[in-house]
Image 1 (tube, rainbow, N blue to C red):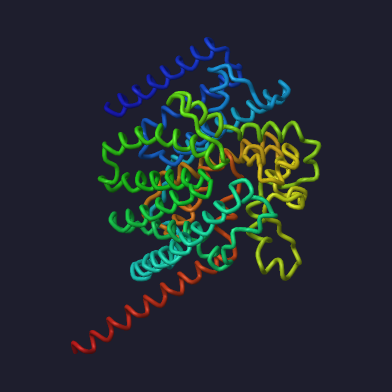
Image 2: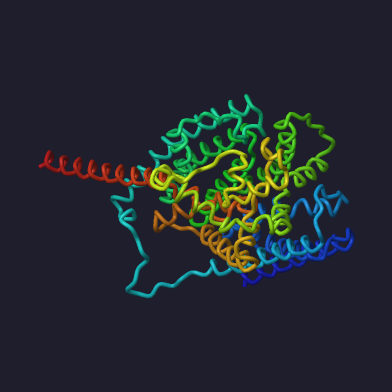
Length: 485
């Protein structure tokens, strides 16, 4: 009976929010298709908010979806702001249809992912040697050691990057002429593996004290990245930390306390103000604070440009015809952009905002930036990407539907992560950060972030270290027995 009451309250809340969206739409003359987008998003937002414990990763993704893809359009409609870039009505309509397709399929995928697979008697879930009691314990220790080692390199790398940005400027740091941040290659490899090592460690479900220590350090690193001029790593890391706490709280109460909700509610407008101010400061402009409301509006105006990436992909289709499988750029990067592939096949890699990178054929954001900004792109300006734009370019609306189904399914499974297969759990947690940023990032960015050559090598180091620790434990225990005998 109590469950029915909870569902009834959720449905009632979703209905109220739906009515409010309709009222706003009619009052401020929202585009019809934009209204449909908002109705689907708002209903899903309320439903998943009502059960955060089981849906935290999906809920964070929906926030990201609104901020990067819908927020600006709502602001423009409410406050009659004019678009900087205008597109044909057919382009706008097609963009909204793709957003509707993505939202519907995300929700369907999440629903499918919420179902538990029943295992018949006599069968068991697949487990690796990492899940054995003795080896698993030492595997957790090895992951912990690797994370702390990589963390030191992460901090060193971000400090070098901060000094570099202060020297050449934020936009110039993206150009090829600036000469690079000067981070040694081996430092970069260890630093890039830190998030994966952390995810592998957290998937072993260490104690609350040990977990919180690692999460706090990771959040500190996220704060440091802000001083490089980038805000998205901090947002993604903060969502990762929050999601992991909710995941653990499902079975181990005490991770999420009521006062934490108040902290988040207070922090959101403060962060919006700080990020809006920082956007001006990093470009060498003065920040003029008029009011909290105006600053929040400016925040959504600044962050919501990813919808134009979808529009540009549709509008510039003819100029993108030579590009293929851009939605698999992360996989391409992991497989081909490494020292082995370069040595064996002579594959050329590109960095910075260069014409060569824009014309190479597998980086949609670089090509769109070159088309949109011309020499401005060479000076550091960029459009960013979006998983919806990439999937649409490669596979049309069907690709957007299938990709969103996969995202919804994956986010639902990650939200319900439990103790079990340590390796799959670690990969799932490592995916989460990249999925949160997918509305303004690449579809398969998690492949490039997790499965690079150096990541696989460092994972093998963890396995060897686990084996070494297991051997030491066995040796010590047998030595103790002989002494006692």
